[in-house]
Length: 128
Image 1 (cartoon, rainbow, N blue to C red):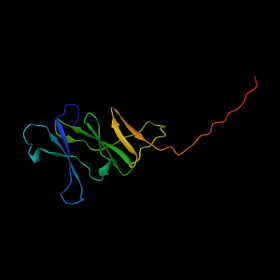
Image 2: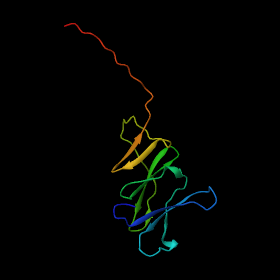
Image 3: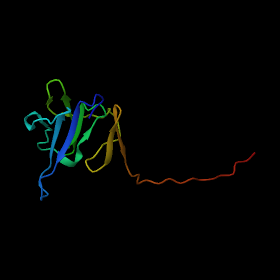
Image 4: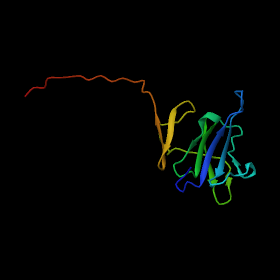
């Protein structure tokens, strides 16, 4: 995870059930890391299936209801910031929704959206 590859991202499902998944960051070492050093990724009240991670591993993006939130991971203290709402530029006609197909690339968000409008092309012969 991230540019320095100093952390592993683990996604655990309870065996034999469809119960809640648990997600952790684990510091990378050649020898096994005790579970007490695993850092749980905070998801309280947030849509678990909406988690995306920035390429640097520094920011985690999730939806809290209809709001896109960012949580910053600090590898030095192995902790997370409080969630902050991601705001789009004023006047932007774009609004990301939890069920949109989206990801994080570089310093920005990328998402696809189906266009429901159509357009017509009219041809006209002009006089010379």
